[in-house]
Structures are given as structure tokens and as C-alpha cells.
Amino acid sequence: MRYGSLILIAGTGLVLIFIYLNHQNQLTSLSYQKQRLELHLSQLREEHNRLKQQLAMLKQHDSVKERAMNELGLMPLSVTQVEQFIP
Image (cartoon, rainbow, N blue to C red; front, top):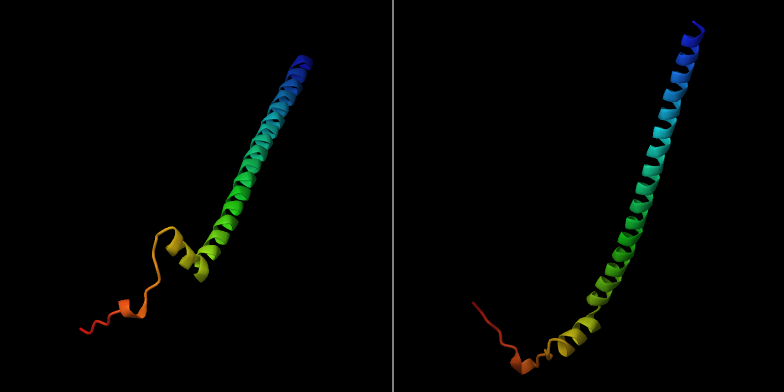
């Protein structure tokens, strides 16, 4: 009877230790996952801000005109080049 109680207590202790270690392992895994997700979120926010700045720059009329002239080789139309089409 005495040995049976000791075995039961030792077995219960081992089960509790296993549950505790499993819980700690899950906490560690979730902590690493959280860090990875926070880093990814930070990178996405940086890219979002960069793209917002780029969009604002591209929307500026002067930069559109400058890009059209310098990069695409387009020139402003003169009044004589404009024709009106009436269907």
C-alpha cells in the first residue's frame, strides 16, 4: 500500500511536470511567432508609408509634367496642334 501511494504521487508529479513543460514550450513558440508577426507588420507599415509618399509625389502636377517631358519625351501641345472633332 505504501509503495502504491508513492508510485501514484510520483506518477502524478511526472504528469504535472510534463504538462508544465508542454505549456512552457507552447508559450515560447507563441512568443517567437508574435515576434515574427510584429516584425512583418513593421515592414508592411514602412512599405505602406513609402508607397503613400510615392503616390503623393506622383500626383503632383509638376512632377507628372516633368516625368512626361524628361522620361517619356513628351512635349506640351500648342493651340495649333489641337483639333476639335464633332461627331
